[in-house]
Figure 1 (cartoon, rainbow, N blue to C red):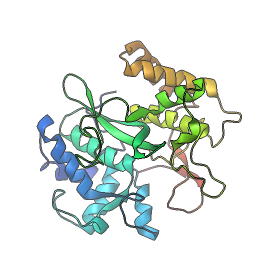
Figure 2 (cartoon, rainbow, N blue to C red):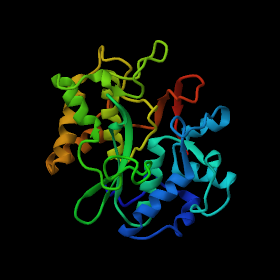
Figure 3 (cartoon, rainbow, N blue to C red):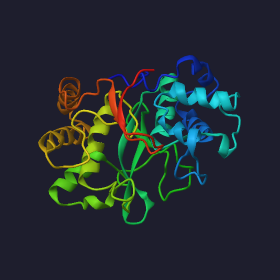
Figure 4 (cartoon, rainbow, N blue to C red):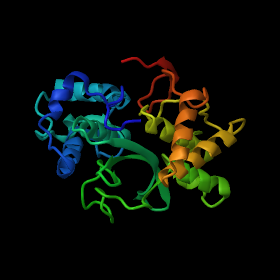
Length: 292
């Protein structure tokens, strides 16, 4: 796909003019990342506990909805400082999607990368979404959520290692190289729910594929072959798309075309507009038709 073109999820809609004032060109990218951090606060890692309608802001799927929430509350240019409590509540996916949206608006190809990061907790790899942009020569990985200097590597030009793609982690888990219980959203069970392990990694392979194909869904949207267990799951299909995505990352254009075609044609993979939503904001887990 053309990563310089907005998707339904990244499209700022009537708020596009707010991006006009943001910095232009590759040299403006750090400034855009700073604006994104000015607009959003992480629902778990921001140091403020949000509940009710404020916590429900994490279910903003569309950049247009994120910007609408900000403008209703603040009503000023995006670079005007917001107090932390006044920022839109979101997660890593939202930081990345808003950043990607702004870069696409500026004509810079950008996409989200779904995987697991080793830099938030010792001995555990948290699910995470970062951005990649094309600088004219290569894809540059950037964690727009992180302040420069906040990690032992350059968060604006990340090396291989601190974040491994979901596909890489799945293949490592399947080969026995990686302990699946060290990859997930939380290292400790939440009641009877274990948000880590093989089933969790597998679902993230499907998120990675969807995001690469322009369906930059929430990390609690579920569809197709996704499942909260490995029992009865089509592991061979996940193996196949993971292998193809890793090969694609390594420059195999044939693999890129094959995995993209699978996403478009295989009902087990393709997002068709309905999601079984398991939002951390609460409420009943249920199927929803996702229309803007």
